[in-house]
Length: 430
Image 1 (tube, one colour):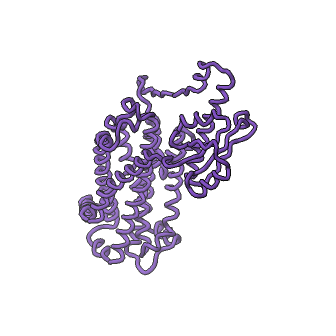
Image 2 (cartoon, rainbow, N blue to C red):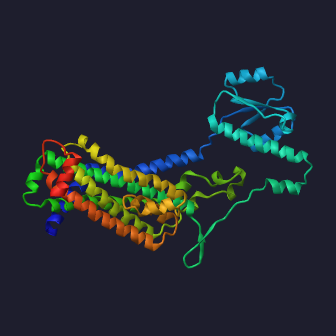
């Protein structure tokens, strides 16, 4: 086996795809698409979903409505003198979105309030109205119970939990578990999608060369194993180049996130009351928590190892078939373990130290997705990380051996796609 020949194939595969318009467009558009997606999500988050809704309140107690008005003056309107028939007419003519009749029975817990509406606002409006009513009626009940003001304040006050995290050296640091959970999930999803995407690219490349009979010319000067390693290395180098570009773009965008947010948002958008804008959140001060360099390194390591394992299998599939439509029967067994890893990843996100998460992160076919999620969220013992890497390397050696057996025979086989029985024969006799 000649490393020079492998490098030549790798360079050809890498440069050919690097210069393709499809690759350049995808590399640029995906970060732009992510920016647009985040922008839409931020816009949805700051959008006042309850704006424009009017709920008529007929408050016979004359004590609950003032409390509702204090909670959301633009949502509730006083219709004390209106009849129920007139309220129904107003709802049907869409002048109001709904109405609620309140009486002493609701305060005395002898009846439950009813919200009559046209369905406008959906579950979001219903939930907000229910929360407001619960708060207003509970407040009135406490007031009538002749409880002192101090006790009322204690009852209505909320308790927040500030979390701190101890490092291995025993130092306290900010606990960014929520942010790192999202980072771990995103990294796992990226590895999942990238392994399938680049593996599929390799499969299509092999099928294309078989279909055009180019493979016959190439194998006259390059051994099949050299060609296989070169093609895997070329697509892998392409993947790493794209990942590095996206990572650099990500960190560049996050560093500019605060100033950009400050251009579109005002400080009073983060305040509980617009009049207290000076005390609200200032978007220009927004910064993301620090992501450790070790996490980025582990991300690249597990991506590369995951790619090598699955790309060797995808290469075998490409060599065993004559068209993309014939790949389905072989793709299913390959997809099962990576899909299992994908679902375990969500369990690991909730509890990264659970037995399922630990075992899943040590199963080589699931490791790339599950382990990176665990590493992002919690302090995974180094021996587990080292063991998972060694197991993945060993698994790659096995899948590469199988792939080389199938590839050496399959790339020169034409006419029909191989069956599982034929693949076993190629492996046994190769």
